[in-house]
Image 1 (spheres, helix red, strand yellow):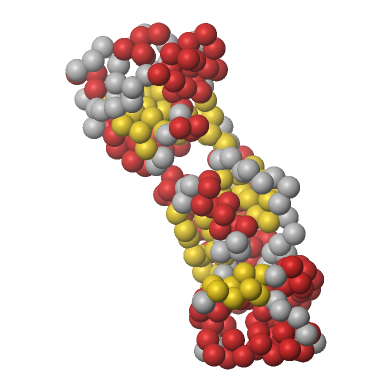
Image 2 (spheres, rainbow, N blue to C red):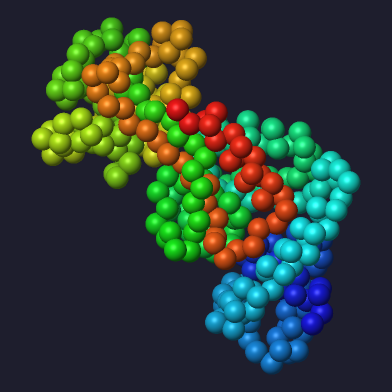
Length: 304
C-alpha cells in the first residue's frame, strides 16, 4: 500500500472534502483527486459516493478509514514524540465550542498550551451542542466542548469545566424593580433566559420547588438567547434577572454592577458542566492528546 495515498485518503475524510485537504497538504485539488482515483483502482472498490463536490464514505470506505487512521496516527505520534523539543511540534487542532467557552475558558487554555507548543495552530468554530456534535461525527472538527452530548456510544466525554450559575440582576435593574426576596417573588420581575431545554430559570425552580415548575415554564421571557455572552449584556442593561456563570461575572460582582440574589444556604444553585468530546474510534494525533492532557490537568481550577 502506498503510504501517500493512504494519508491523502484519511486527510480528505478528516477535513471533509478535497478542497480543505488540498490546502492542508499544500497540494492541488487535481493531485488529491487523482490519488483517490488511483487508490480506488488499486483496491478495486469505491471509497466514496460522489455528488458533485460532496463526498460521502461508502461502507467499504468507512471500513478502510477505521483501519488506516489509527496506524497513520501511531506513526505520526511516534515521530513527534522523538522530537527533542516541544517547540518544534506543529499541526492544527480543530475545535468546536460555545461562545462563552470561546471567550472565557479556551483562550487561557490555548495560551498555556502555546507556551509549550508555539507552532501548533487552533481552528476554532463557534456553535451549539447540535452543530458541534454534527461536526464531530462528520470529522469537520477533532475536539468539541459540549453541555449535552447525545450520541454517547460514538462520542467520548471528559468533564473539564464546572461552574455555578448565579441568579443576578444589575444595579440599573434595581432602580426600577424591587429586589426579589424569595423564589416566588422572582415570578413578578422580568426575566432573560436561555432557550428551550437550556432554560436556567425552569431548571432552577424545579431544583428548589418542583410544585412551581409548571408555572415557571409558562413565565414570559423578556429576551431568550442561546449565548451566555449576550445574556450577560442583557442583564447588565437592566432588562431582567438572568443566570450567569460565576467565572464570567466575578469582576461585575466585585464592582457592584451585578448583584447576586440568593446564597446557597437558602437555595440550591445550578451548575453548568462542560465536557471535552471526541469520537471514540477516531485516533487522535500527538498534539490533540497533549491538549486533552492540559485540559484535564487544569480541570480543578475551572471546577467550583
